[in-house]
Image (cartoon, rainbow, N blue to C red; front, side, top):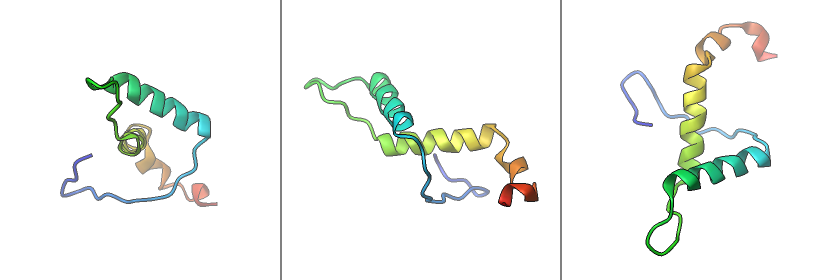
Length: 72
């Protein structure tokens, strides 16, 4: 995700289920396909980054952080 003047990249540790990560890897491989040698060339860590960032933008994270109950 390219950084803009009003966004910064924050590197954080998050917990996801193993099955979730397996699904991300499978789907990323499907989309990337293989090269001429049958090798997948996909950065799954960057794929997770893009998916989480997209989710936070589209699912109202900005509104979520304003509710003090969410900090408990």
